[in-house]
Amino acid sequence: DGGITQSPKYLFRKEGQNVTLSCEQNLNHDAMYWYRQDPGQGLRLIYYSQIVNDFQKGDIAEGYSVSREKKESFPLTVTSAQKNPTAFYLCASSIGWNSNQPQHFGDGTRLSIL
Amino acid sequence: AQSVAQPEDQVNVAEGNPLTVKCTYSVSGNPYLFWYVQYPNRGLQFLLKYITGDNLVKGSYGFEAEFNKSQTSFHLKKPSALVSDSALYFCAVRDGAAGNKLTFGGGTRVLVKP
Image (cartoon, rainbow over all chains, first blue to last red; front, side, top):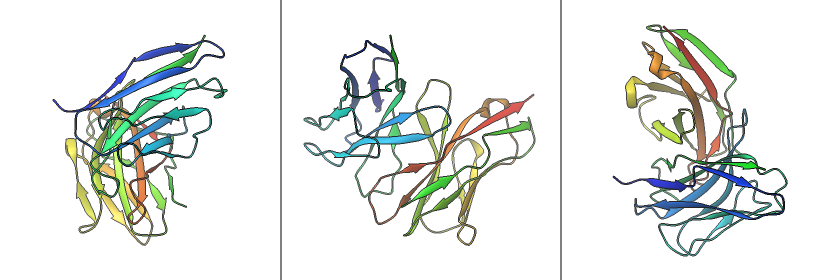
């Protein structure tokens, strides 16, 4: 079945450590997205990529970095500069940036601080 | 700027009764509107969308939503709620002329009691 796979499901970070969250899709979608979910705040956009080898900052990009070297992969790095990284991180994809089709979501990675 | 408001943090309903989850939006261009559902520790699942056409949109699992341009609303409805409908519901909007950047509401938790 086609879909989006996020790994790991749970991740723990030590102070001063960078961690990388994996997101892989086999839907052949051009556009990919990273969101952060905090209780009561809905989803906030961290970074997005309209097409391979391209990405742009979203609303809360500080302390995060991404790459898009392959169409199917869009890893997110949470750097030590992100002072409050504890959250549920969701990756999504869509057919294209200007498509009216919905975004499809993975099952998330829950990041906690040790 | 685009925005979404879900005025109720939680909606309680008895099984078999009608369910309504409210959403109002603000967008400068033509609105593309979406409803998603989230179960615990899972990603978001797409329920339905409004792009253009009929104001009453039918979606998955018996849900429907009514687009009201004058009231800038897109309320989600289900005629007869099931206990399994208990989940977190998100409304989202994008400007039809501004790419696939979604803005999400804060979410409404639905609790259906037997």
